[in-house]
Image 1 (cartoon, rainbow over the protein chains, first blue to last red):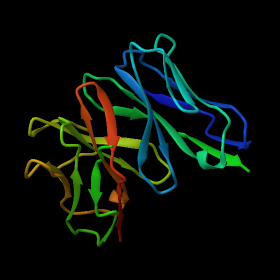
Image 2: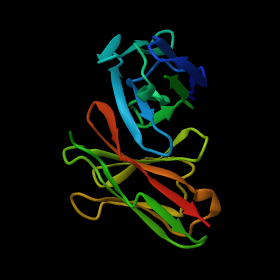
Image 3: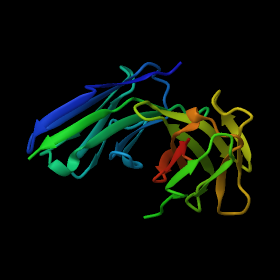
Length: 112
Length: 112
């Protein structure tokens, strides 16, 4: 049974820092992995989608990597800003049953 | 950018009442989903829908739940007789062939 774990659970950093959020999954037979952002009480905004054949994806200050064989993905945020404060969720997609399995998220606070 | 639209954004209902949550998926997507998130917990899969039928459902999706695509654009989740433990954020999503989910902004359901 696929399990997704995210470390750390919470992170507080000063503005301008580069930071890394971690996601691990127990079954490497995934179709893709998606990172989402969730603001308090709000919806799920897709940040990056990495297909299983890809090693990384970039969007602006965000870079996500995928190492399927070791069951890990990292989300790198460069030059963090207070507006980046949110919960970051990773979810894996097994493909055969077309459902996402989610981590609990990393709650990020970027302090001005 | 195409969006998934959910209505209402908030719904308060009395225990035992029926509720219908509505969604308009992205028009050229083929797969539709409902997920829910109880406060402080992981996002959980409820049901996936493809080609006008349920393709998979979770243990949570019991006889109290049903989904329907009544026309070419809407996708609904009905809870027949709500319980207190149904209080959660309900998210609709759609995806194309290669995965890559797009989520709506959610409906916050409060059962009193």
